[in-house]
Structures are given as C-alpha cells and as structure tokens.
Amino acid sequence: MEESLIEIPFDRLRCREPEAWESFAEQVRVMLGGFLRGMKVDHHASEEIIQDCLFVAWRRLEGLRDPQRLGTWMRTIARNRFLTSLRRRGPKEVALESAADVHVVDPPLEEGLPGVLRVEVHRLTGRKRLIIELRILGGFSPEEVEEMTGIPRARQRRCLYNALSDLRARLCGGDGRTAVRRPD
Image (cartoon, rainbow, N blue to C red; front, side, top):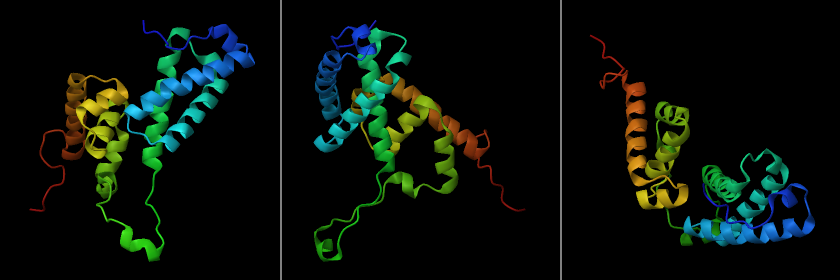
C-alpha cells in the first residue's frame, strides 16, 4: 500500500484541529507544488490548484475511505483540477494595438475535430478518454502522461489502442468500413 507522504495523524485532521490543518496545508503545498511543476504547470495556476485541493480536502475528508491514500487522493484532485483548467481555457484576448506581438498558432486539435468525432471522444469513459485527451489532443508524450497520471506506457498503448478501436467501431459501423453508404 502506498504511503501518503503526509505526516499528520488523520484523526486530528478529521477533528479539524487548526494546528494539524496548518501543518497539513504546508505539507500539501510542498507535495503538490513539486507534482504540478513536474506537469509543467505555471506557478500562479499551481497556487490556484493547490488552494482548490485544500478546499476539497476540508469539505470531503470524511469521505476518504483509506487514510493511507491521502497523498494519492490529493494528487488525483490536483491532476483533475489541472485537466479541467486545460479544457476550460479559452482563446486569449489581445488589444488590437499589441496584436503585432501576438504569434498566431493553430487552434487546439480538439476544437478542429468534426462534430461527430468530438461527440464520440466525449462519450469515451475513464482512462480511454484521458489517454486520448492527453496523448492525441493534448500532444503530451508517453513519458509526460506517465509522469502526470502514473499510467505506465505499456498500459497507455493498450488503452490508446482500445480507445481508437472503440472510436473506429462507433464511427465506421464496427466492421472497419465507413458507416455512411454512397447512393447507388
């Protein structure tokens, strides 16, 4: 079983002792700060995510079944908050007078996906959707995805293969040929 890397007695946290929470918050800041730096999250976004994680912990700590997994739970919350922030990030607005300083880049691949394909990607569940979003839509390498999620590269390959097979079956009618027929 994985150690939590947080050295505060769990019962003191559940009782909401101020000293315990202060120490907990400091340990979480250090642990998640390193974790988010490894995911290439900038300092300001990292601070925001850590604050969100502490708030979630304050509200939902009683629901944690295994106190030994407290560190894992906090990292999972941080990862999910980061991925949510990536999904919600919209186009950046720039004043017209400073437009000469802006470099134009292609829109994210997900925005360019045809409607049907976008719907089918969103219908994927669990790891399949996560791997598609990170590897294909996000452009992260297998090593980066492993570092962010803890999913080994071999499992990523299997998951990616299964996700693409599911998408192909849904879009092509299951037999690998296009589901849309040409008129005779």
